[in-house]
Image 1 (cartoon, helix red, strand yellow):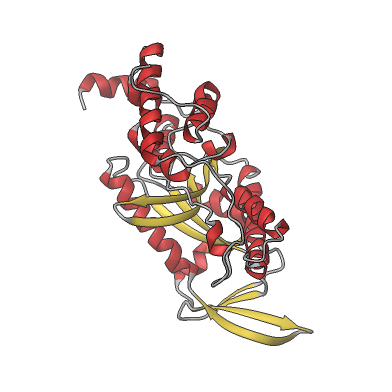
Image 2: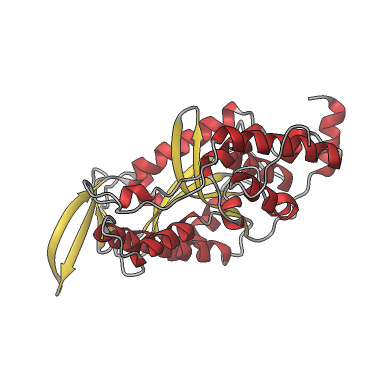
Length: 342
């Protein structure tokens, strides 16, 4: 980097972030619950309603837990940039990041668990879920360590950010929070220090981050750099797709299949590519500034049906969706066709 560029960045850098900012909030779980709700209302015999009901409860519990954590983060009055529900993929490695919190001093991946019962952590760092009734233990079972899980996620995120030259010495931390207000966390006195320090209740989040921010750090990131890192993470977001076929009973097929107009991926791609070229010329912009090939591939893979689902597509934000989102939907679903010579 040249001296002049360094000088320019030094003059333009700002440290104005004073309070929490929710920079990205996925709508996947809401969309998933809506899809499950539609399946639950169906009277088709081939749908596994028991599985639908179980997943409705499971995802609703998880969603409730993450909303509780998000509330604590947004009301912490601390300078945080928050990314919520970010599944990423980098060089074949995948990680489901419940929360990524970026600060001037560090980046932290926060894993959220909302479980029924209490949690005991042994001296060896083993996690056990304990169910009690009338002050008596009725069930004790081991569970996969959420610390091991979040450590793996951090390793993937760190690899992504370092290999794409986003960070060098920015510390990456991890923590696990249990979002059920009734859950008691019992940690053995001789449990590993990492677990003692980084397993918290959701109502301890503000104190936890305040203590972290009070520690010394090798960096003091300006606002611009924080948002650059956030954008880089979102570039590698790999949105999850709802698969309704996974809720079909084995050996049972629909009596009557709906008649749906079929548009080949090749035709969709040709229309989207032709529109991109035409619109770039019309607005005097580079074609990849309209949307790049990664966004094109995501459109073809995800097949969004409305503007909410378009927001899940990497590379498309509210401004672009307002500008030409309806055209993208029409091109994808055959309501409009765009040819190369248009």
